[in-house]
Length: 313
Ligand SMILES: Nc1ncnc2c1ncn2[C@@H]1O[C@H](COP(=O)(O)OP(=O)(O)OP(=O)(O)O)[C@@H](O)[C@H]1O
Ligand SMILES: [Mg+2]
Image: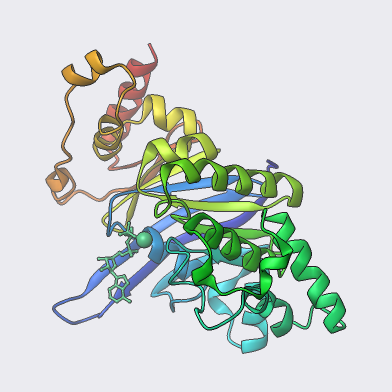
């Protein structure tokens, strides 16, 4: 991981149905950055705005406000189709449901080659086919199976197809939106290992979205905790896992099953009461200790600093 910021998200807002009774602030003033070569884990319960954050970064949504600086350029300002196509070569997305995200009527070879074709990345059919074969091998699939259709593959294999499709355009940054949640537990580690190997070999940067803190802990360098469209806490994996202080982070931590059954039976799950945030005070994400950010009011800064210190003592 370098200290060069690859993606800088500033005050990102994504509201839906603005001005209507069903208005949703799916992403509400979210600020974070991701270093080159880093894996940034984004966790939170269903509906917290994780996918919307990812989709807005990659411009599948038109952002309501804020900036998304990638490689020094604000991608929210991209207007032309051509410029957007170039940006989407650099930034790819892998989805939770590997079946729904693959066209069932297309052969796997053609699914993987789509980005190569659209971007004119192969000079000849031979080069295109050779590249697809290489991609199939890279993700651990048999190149002879490229003429098959998605339904002929298992869930884990389909996710490998989705990964090959993303890699085909040689991206620098991949948004992994719960890429293993739909897979059997026995298969999850294999796909995670593949993603980690690829990151290492191809110097990739990941935004890794998950429900579960225990899942992202091992693969993330840093973690952001999201709830109700807000980023509530950010820090290194170890810091969040061991010294997370926002009540919502604490509730997530208390929900992770413990390996020791005796201890597991006696410990209490903390339930998050979000009325603490509805007291009329102005809160923003603030750096409480070095690199450890918490969504807090001015008055709460000292409280959280003391809380971190107490946990570390
Ligand atoms: N296109 C849309 N139109 C209206 N509301 C939307 C749209 N997309 C998302 N939302 C709403 O935005 C909120 C955040 O949704 P989002 O899918 O980002 O959550 P999530 O954290 O990814 O949840 P999950 O863990 O279930 O995938 C939800 O209330 C959702 O209903
Ligand atoms: Mg989602």
